[in-house]
Image 1 (cartoon, rainbow, N blue to C red):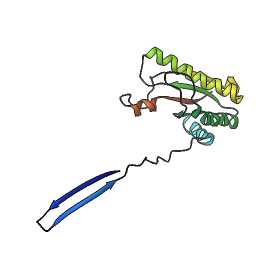
Image 2: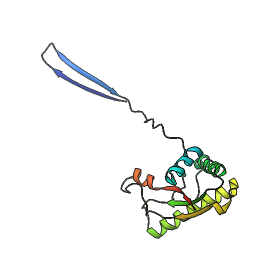
Image 3: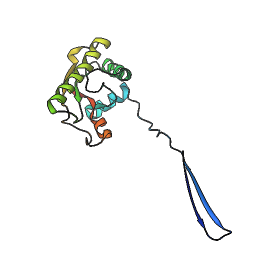
Length: 159
């Protein structure tokens, strides 16, 4: 908490003091729950869905454990839509060289596919991994918030 005190003396007998107490709290973002139904609606409406909560270790293709519930929702989506085939496209920010990021994004997409196939019994013929590195940003790369938006996996409906 922060205490802000301001005041004005009008005379020897009259002084006005203003006290504000500012309490910092984390913003409640009320994020949309990303589940199989939400992804299905995006795929049907737009042909794609960006998944920014599939998280990887820094400069690695290892999925973080926090990503597993979302990955399970992707598997549920695929079970519920047995005829859909997807491009799984990895994206990175612009930190590092282009060739490095292109390879990293491909490996991350391949890891998502591997996990869906091996851990959720999804037919590998339905998933086609690709990486485009930093070449399709959603935001500028000049801030951490922008770079975070650019690090994602996109599911794109394919014929």
